[in-house]
Image 1 (cartoon, rainbow, N blue to C red):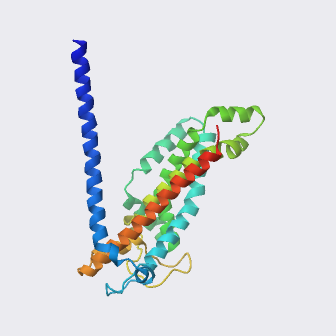
Image 2: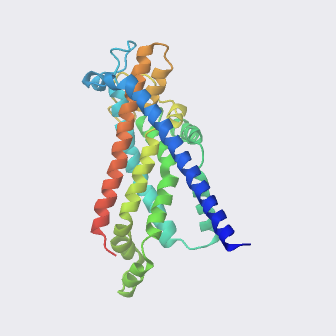
Length: 288
């Protein structure tokens, strides 16, 4: 085949792929922009201090998101406190201590598969284990444990990837000076991998904050006019409150749902911004 024709064909193929990828990106951005504009036009003017500090009400003009907002903050705090040590610990063990045997491969495959399991399955698992098996009822701790099961595979995978990105020469230098595996991991490897671990952790929480199906499956309340005072109190969260409002026929509740979505999007954006800031801050402290 003529070299010039081959080069021309490759250029055409490259241009077709480039413009196809650009078109796909633009379609996604346009759809997202339309949704954001529609939500902002409906709910932006509804957001005020009364909306943030009022409890839900049967009258849309008096309804607020206080109980859902506080419940979301409680659930995310508990989920982070439980999932971080478990996920990071499991990731450290699999990457730094576990051998390359058949059992380790089976565990790795299962963790990868669990990351793709539909969230409703975790809700049914939480219903069977925590609500009925451990008699924790529809409480804050039940919701946090259920969401922990949901994001643990993501955190474990992110931890392993962050640890794997640390040059092995750092480990060799530490071992050569007489350090143990734990000393090397704790003082050398983990600080270097911390930016990636924290980023994966916050991104996992960003997914959990928008989940509705698992919490509905365990019986989280759709209407609650008080704030939880203990880990065993019932709760509601922002996605469930939005789900409750959009199912109402009155147009005022649709406006409230749009306003709540804006608040939820702001919370997710703040968490992702925090992930970027932490990554950059810890990244400046680590020098390889």
